[in-house]
Length: 176
Image 1 (spheres, rainbow, N blue to C red):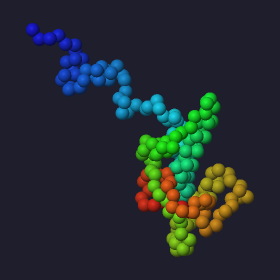
Image 2 (cartoon, rainbow, N blue to C red; image 1 turned 180 degrees about the vertical axis):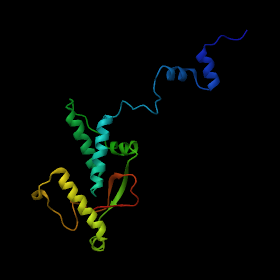
Image 3 (cartoon, rainbow, N blue to C red; image 1 turned 90 degrees about the vertical axis):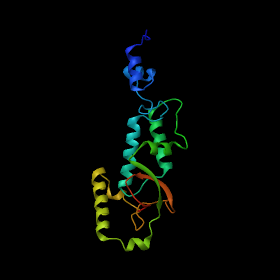
Image 4 (cartoon, helix red, strand yellow; image 1 turned 135 degrees about the vertical axis):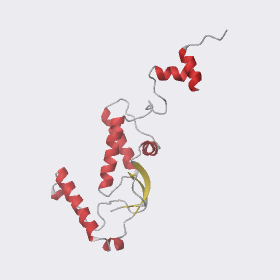
């Protein structure tokens, strides 16, 4: 006489899947690879807003350093108002970039003044159009625009540095 088996047991043998796994899937439990871990410090919405912030800065020609991203993440955690205030760790930015396919970590290079003199006028015009659009979009007062010389807004960026920017950029990121 053959052994008595439940329908799920027979299905697991036919599909070559462990019976416990099949039961969990039938009861609606998510796969560990696709579910979001409880150990994430920021919520999905907070991470999306941080990603938008990085892409926004990158679109204006100045990608943030990992320390800036970390400070912004800590600011988001601080605004929650939890006690005690939690903060992200040293490697958090690296893991965040790995989770986000639109972001990438790369080295930037300092923008050379000699090369800037030889730039294409069309590219320069597009950049100034972007600046004008940003001024109009955010209602920036002309008195608040300063340090706008041949090096642009790259204050404090004097050497090659690691930055976080959009992933589809190829080559080294030039700081304006």
